[in-house]
Length: 332
Image 1 (cartoon, rainbow, N blue to C red):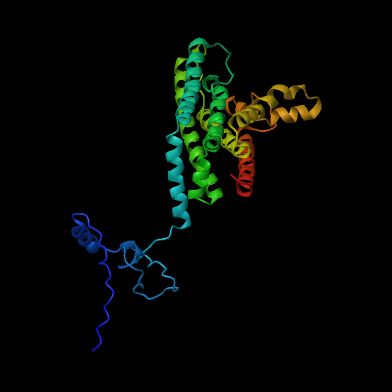
Image 2 (tube, one colour):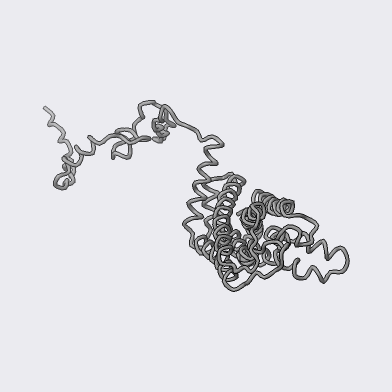
């Protein structure tokens, strides 16, 4: 009888020691809900790759994630809703920037302060029949305050290019023209409201403090032209500066350019011989402002007050159209 062949003895496999509490941790992990895009028994749970419930796989152990469930009702923003949100975003940005606060304070102080100063020191001893100078003297500070308005218009957009915030803005809102339109609306309304309040307060202070030897009162038409026209000019020169700042994307260069356009034609235009010099002076922004605050007929100009404001609106529109074209065509 043959002896049985001895079977080879295999050493017992080494069983790794489990840390204390491992069974409890595994039980807790099994009770956790399966996240979207994963499935029980997959690599995320330490097991071998298994087919997901839908059974779609490429044979290599990789399976597409299960899409997360979507809500039954999902509202897509319409054009008006998108623009409204953009207006809210621009209003939040412009009112939380320090340059906005300081520029508006300086503008108001210049307008109201000049009215109080001239009202306390200037005596109206002009003869009868002359227009009441109270509107002109009260609003003469607008000629200086326009520098603050123009600077704020440039900084409203150029500061975003300096800090790089414009990239985040255009990433969140890819519609570049909508961004520029919302920024223009918010800034223009803000400048008009603040300018209107400052100009009306300046008129009240200047008219009350002006010492008169001959008592005359301005007509409502002159007051409306001076106060509303000055506020309109401040808003338009700010929008013009916003367009220049968008095109140049540099604070110092844009402010210098705007100030040159505002001041140089009215100062040096008279040195140009012939009709060209008169044309440069008559259609310069400074002359358009003077026509608004001066009494009717006191300034010889090719345009009256309100037609001059239409021309100023054309300047602002041209700057914004150029800014829109460049903003849409070039990289940020």
